[in-house]
Length: 474
Image (cartoon, rainbow, N blue to C red):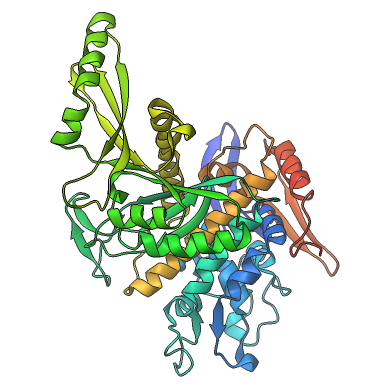
């Protein structure tokens, strides 16, 4: 006979005369009650149904309990709610709230076919893992990995979502390009040591337009930081111009993207560019008088001083033609700080000072968006063996970012939280404890009376409901 010696309750340190006791008897409770706001966002964006359409499913329909849309939605919602690893879904598969977000009708899993799955309405980590590992060439004949993603369709969807976020074509848009490191801790395909970052890593390429993500391309780190940029720009600019033929397009990047191939492509395709230019002795000499003036002003005032010069310049070998260069001659306390930018924008668009300070330096905001995705939405969880699978993980993170940005753009617009980052949005408005009651006609969520942002939730929901559901009428 087995002795039942385990207590069903947790005993904590007393509070005065009162015992403090915890029990796991609260019924169905979720810690992600605010996730329903993300579902409201997707109702407006129509992102997840179209994301699922980017996958081909070769499974036997009679044996499928989790549709591709359910699997993809579970993965994207999980990342948005802060669950970065596939292993997390072995616990999350029992969460009725996440099941509601995904669109499951059986929120408790009571009607699952196999007895061992009953009580778990969602997929576990092994099923989600097979979603990542399928390949178009072999998925149809594979025994387990029978779902394959179409990368070209995923790329198009990112740009489509950006285009749909505008009611009318803008007069001008700026595309920011940047590369960053994605450190690796295993023997993944495409793993190389990068001397600048001092680690084994991938070198993903990001392209943003403001806060909108247009491209997240995983690359090995043994290539130039600008590798593949022309191909991505051809694809993105072509898709944008098909919808917005009159919109002016300008690209912006640091000196890592100052490559003749990129600049020549822009010049041939009516695309503007403002790119950082690495300094050298010739450039330094061209800025000599301005540096002397800045130093003289600094010695008088004791403060930082700047001068600018606009001139024509061509490298001795690497450039195919002469181009406009703007030089910033800056003298900081005890040191010179010259910087250079190359552009094909005419002087009428802005003089040297305006072009550098108001047009080029704004690109630093893109770095915050990359950090937001990598740190807040786990774009660096590229730990599976192949680059294809890791690229798919980066896609999932990217679409989780689009979903969170949609909440910020549609739900927080006009509020004092309009610039809140993903981690703040998650902490304040998504991570809400709630008791779930499921009846035939309703799903009730009971939130804490002490929740401090109840008025914010009501305002966000009201803002979201001003937008029509996708697809838009007409």
